[in-house]
Image 1: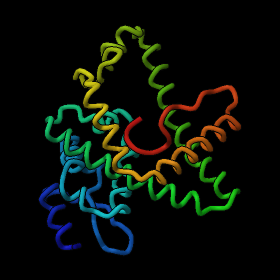
Image 2 (image 1 turned 90 degrees about the horizontal axis):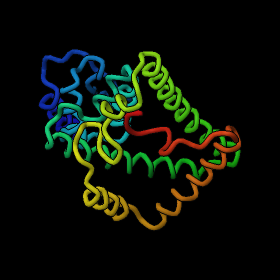
Image 3 (image 1 turned 180 degrees about the vertical axis):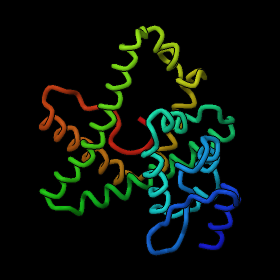
Length: 222
């Protein structure tokens, strides 16, 4: 298995790349996003090599990816400049990764005692706060430059549209939602409802005057 994954890694990123990440005690190496171009990152996220790595390896790579400069990270995750085929494969790979990560988090959370569960929720909220502050920084920077709301809308996409300029497809969104539901069991969906209820309650305890940002602390770009 390791030999097969290594072969896929070489095919996905090329033999000329010399910046790597070491994953745990397995000896598996991954390309370091800081040494890749935007196109190489996008292609790697869409590759069979990324898909066939174990969960720890994928999360190691995504953690390094989230440490890239904000503007670059957002561009990569939005697949700006990528082909439709690359977008589709990467979206599928990321959806599977997020579903697996969610399952692992739920298993971990519900095995913890009450105090440990609170600490777990606080860690997620802390991640959300980092993203919120990044958003506020972008907004303040845009306002300081004299950029109007209309100009920001043109840059990020019209309401109901997409930031990459493509038209929002409600039928495709519905299909993706149904796919996510079919990929989870009733027990998993029930656990997620309990978890996010607890998360919102904890957020209100810490920040009673703010509404919790939609989403959570992990996943794609913010």
